[in-house]
Length: 274
Image 1 (cartoon, one colour):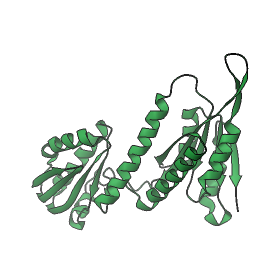
Image 2 (tube, one colour):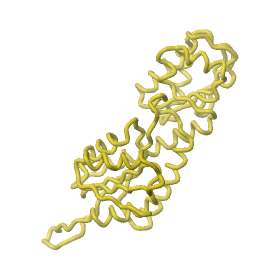
Image 3 (cartoon, helix red, strand yellow):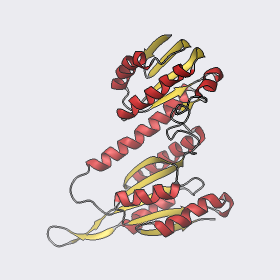
């Protein structure tokens, strides 16, 4: 087995007949210093794989998780994937992507979310009221929800001299990406992540144009309702703005909205366009 580490990719070539994680680990540690958001393992050049060899990927995932990074297995030959499916604990833990480009795009989106979270935590002093704007697939343009969040979240405060001032809200926009339970939580989902990336770009452009105090990111979850309610509690949100999708979208998204209304720990405002 040849292990080649370049950029953010570890390429494996040859036979993977035993657990080689200890050999790969040194290369992974070097790459993680340069790419702390995660690295890729390109498996396209593996010619054969045994069950013991497949455990290489499970040990790799455990190592990366301890370092709060991510690893995505890319371009896996079917002969290797067939072995991975037979090894308990490996198939359910190892996120895979058809190409390195798709895996890298997923890692970049995850890094963007963590950077936004870090900036939000770094804010000091008295915090303005928080408004959560969860976005579920099929909802309307995010601009409408952000505009409403700004209006209903603005409060009247007082300056040091007793004069009235407007206190603008902190707006947290979260794209709720539901990952099927049959897949590892960090598995790249190209179609959904492309939609999320487009929405985040639209939201950040709108926030910049209208001078909104907004953070945005993607929340990967198994349960949209629990994720939204949990985010509201974590933010100590005063209000939530949630878009009700058009009737043509279907019942799944509508059910999410209805359940959030019952469980939310804060005031919820709905916005709807046909």
